[in-house]
Image 1 (cartoon, rainbow, N blue to C red):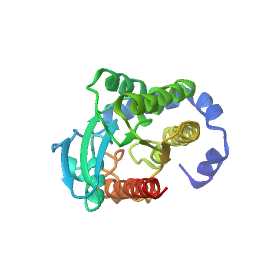
Image 2 (image 1 turned 135 degrees about the horizontal axis):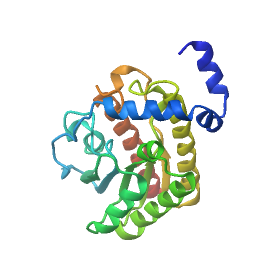
Image 3 (image 1 turned 120 degrees about the vertical axis):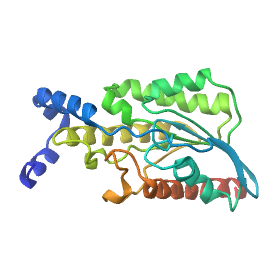
Image 4 (image 1 turned 90 degrees about the vertical axis):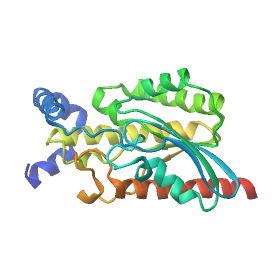
Length: 250
């Protein structure tokens, strides 16, 4: 796709473009699913305790990114990156409840059916499968609200960090114009998360500031790689330290 057409697409409303290019997008989507490199959820501990200092109970939940797909181990995925950053100031007890392919509604039902717990912080990674799976925006907002409420009321979470969607418009595994349409929808879903966070106490949105460089993307051209997880974990840890420091001094 040439630079001129790229510019035209960016200026269009993606919803009208998606309707106009519907048949092409369906073909591209089916081909992308058929030819995609499918990476497994990596091995490693999904629960444990590390560090010293005040106790901090951490839950990482959601989709394949929460499950560290794209990293060689859980230690080099999201949970491992967060724990590595926080363990010098906290005694971190963490748990990962995540599975590849989950949409928000499915993740909500799994948490409802799962064991209760007691956590201080929850980090969610959800939305990519809602975008690609056709979840309506109204349903996405309702499910995210219910998720935050469940985390707070059933699992005792004091701070919920909703992760903004990744830059899907830059995923090399997706062809154009499918990449652009999905990318625009992902940006819209991040704005919906921000809307949810403004309405609910103890809830914030974090969209990691990841460089649009191939070295940050896993070999499948779709998931974060270890460098991306490390940066994502660092930003989560910064937010957690800032939030809990202000609560302790407030």
